[in-house]
Length: 545
Image 1: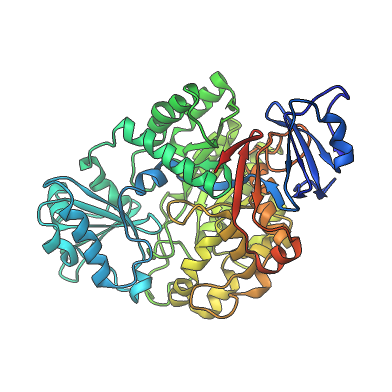
Image 2: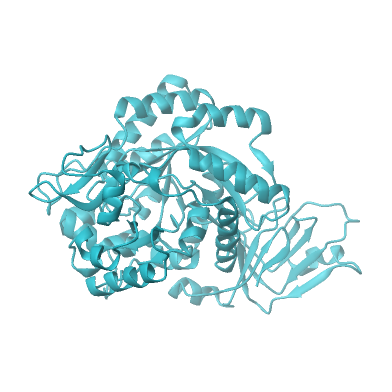
């Protein structure tokens, strides 16, 4: 039993007759927990917390239900998630006809001249053919359209949009991006990575009220899925304005925090180019702005995505033999930004998906660590999706956080096999077990809205690794246990953002964020990975349902 209290304390809430998985190795399981003033007072047996029960204490008998720490989504885009919930939804579309029909319906219900936005399309679901503006021009004659691929690294524009932005056969590719063109040189409508910036200035800014509503909408969804904290990387994709994240911080997050409208905790990361602004802000406000808001660090980009053929690999894509992917940020610039950020004691996270991109980021991190000397810096690689054979060991040796998204495995199993070849894909993709074996910190998230906010789904995927339509696990040697998968969504995700003093485990002194699950059998949960959310609590107060 662990405890933190004086004998005269009286708890606000006591859980009893529960199966509490604490994520605290000093006491892995308990059956009771006492909470006072938003924090955990004591954890152990009921007899150990009984003296904390008083006339005003609410006792909750859970009948043996499993309780786990509130899930921490280690990588998401919360406001973007909320906005996309009201836009054209193309997730799961597996036929060209349905793709066009959904867009036609959206245009039909949109005023002439108004933008049709949204996305989530995945061309791999209908055989791999990339969409073109010509697919949708006839059904969107009066509306500019921009629809992002599921990974956020490629967008489809219609002809109205191309003309509005002045994109023609004479337009050159911007640095870090590609304009899709036919063999004759005409734009196809596909804008890859930073090529999106040619269109974005023409899209009206989303009103502050809409962004605030989006935060509330996405936060409600998160709570329903058991997420009590999200590490938010803003609305910044390659090509988007770096100011978006800062506007969301001031206009949305600070407003919500000061007006008591925050529903989940957020740890905010900002574009790496703005490291000095974040350094000044932390110096002014501290990293813990409030119990609801933490200032994290900065994020950069090494490459693009697998689905867009822009993830950077040592060897070419098998379906595009002349293409090894795209380096989004020039190496020297990425190194210099990392060095400057680290000197300013900022945490650095860099997006890397391909094996070459991951190796490059590890090289940069190793060089910065060697130059600036040892400290607790917790460098992160976002996605860490495809790793060369030596990379997991380097993650562990250098103490680099692997911030991964299990649900991407479901989307990318077929894609990786088709684009990299089965043998290569199976050697280097989603190496969760290898990373843990090499003592790397593995933190799980969703990358919402690229994938759903759904930790229980991610846990099941990490345990089973069975993609849709498959009857067997993809690389079963990389499967995790239930304990390991939960920890990647809790204590390890907290550690990955310096939140582990307050969050990530059900330990005395920490904030009382926890989830009650539908199951009362740990063995069945461990065998199947199946459960649902019955209730979500933040600071000891029920937040869902």
